[in-house]
Image (cartoon, rainbow, N blue to C red):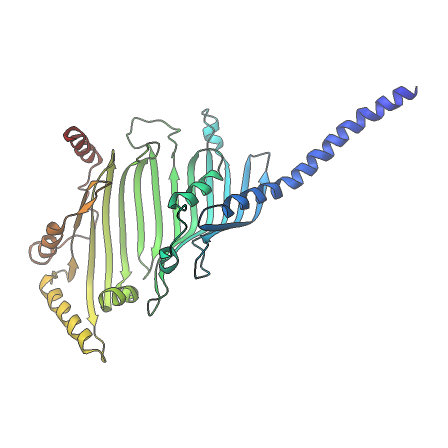
Length: 365
């Protein structure tokens, strides 16, 4: 009789102990994962990283990283190089139904701030640019197939300039799907990318393209437009590097780039419309320089459209990409005296042609 009672107690006690252990493990697991992640971030050569909190959802196979911070250990400023407010990482269930185990990432208010002075400082010899990027990707245990960014920010900051330079893109919305080529199609570039943002000066930026990231050197076919940015917002930058200020003007940028088998071809087409330069009352040499530039601006701009523009061709192997100087110069005169460049994507860069050029380069080698 006593043995039966002991047996009954064990029958209930053992499952209860297991249940308590599982509950305890569930409660402790976020702290264990958080400590592991912080150790990974702290061990990146030349960098220091930290996360504030991690939430886990074992049922859905998802976890959320809160307030991820990363910066160089010898950074002089307190501005983090990377600051990700909230990052949701989960299994992509639609791909799981196709027999592929991949993940999707949803980032809320991520920021990447390149502080010129911080990034120019020397790092330990064993530090490498790929160290921090690899550490971050290692936080995702399975391949990323879908990426979403909401209300992101990218910026270039130079604190020693007077005044400070702050070139940035805000309100970044980015969508990249089928990155691991889960949905197989006949198309050479299976992954789609789309992004929109607001630039400095209130310009509208749009990026559209297709990619193949499965390859070691990814193939890409991208187009970018930046329209209606106030040129005066660039004054801190242009004054520091060229001694020029805009009293008014409208800045636009159009670009196409295609990469096939490591060979790149594309162009960058900047257009400044209705621009007016201003001088400095107390700096005769600056006024003289701006007058000189203004004279050439008068000669080289298209007066009918009131635009100053050029088209910079870029072509070559990714290890030796070159901009073509002479076409860049002649394109300035072409815009001024022959035909004004249109504020649109030219659609003259085709992926298949770049692929053909890449094959020709291989045969020559």
